[in-house]
Amino acid sequence: MEERNMNYRGDQAPVMTIGTWIVTMLIMIIPFINIIMLIVWAASSNENPNRKNWAVAQLIFMAIGILAGILLAGSIVALISSLT
Image 1 (cartoon, rainbow, N blue to C red):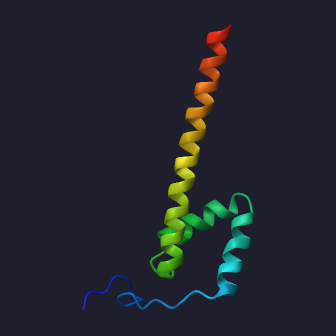
Image 2 (cartoon, rainbow, N blue to C red; image 1 turned 180 degrees about the vertical axis):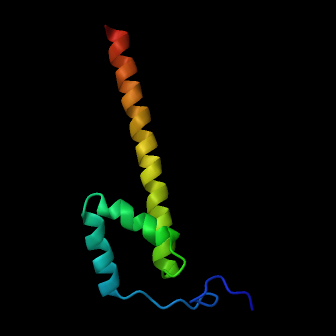
């Protein structure tokens, strides 16, 4: 049987409890620490696959949001500069 992770075989990762998710969400409230922890959780090979996949998805959404913000800001600057 192929192992995807050293600690978890197949899809039999332990279920994350509500308490674990609450702590995870509380960590996400703290500026800068949230980004560091997302990177740690996404890159860790010993992390619960559920939180690891969630962290990867959060980082993807953050990247999309940053790109959308840059495009929006660039559009606004171009619009304002064309009016003057």
